[in-house]
Length: 156
Image (tube, rainbow, N blue to C red; front, top):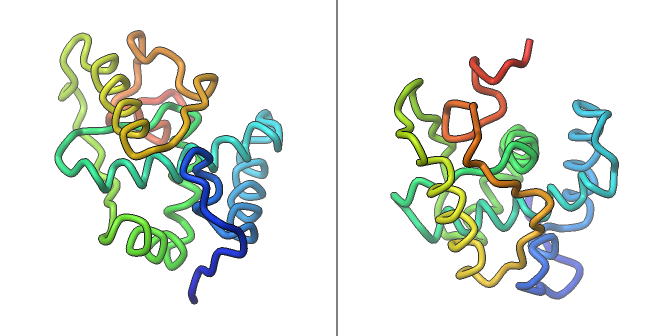
């Protein structure tokens, strides 16, 4: 399956990196799994996910991490493995792996530093930041570099 874009890419709006059909499928998956999140917010999450993955691929070894909301988008995108792999190859030039950290690997204050590094990488890649989706992670209690699907995230 190829991912043809039917509209020009606007680097300030990362949602334009995704074909509309794929963006719609990701929005649908996230709103189904997280009905507490509005469709409008979910569409913004999908855009920030595209920016995060694109920036992560340009910053190998930089230990970037999504916010809790953007992590919902990343997990939904990864489940669409063919589309995700094609996106990574087209936008980054290689596959961007999801590599969770082990419990206790994060030092005090590291979540805030990781957030700042991540947002700087997204900005450096030319994308706008939706600040509402990237709250201050200084008080983050999640392990696995902010991954909401971590076994210690409190989800049952």
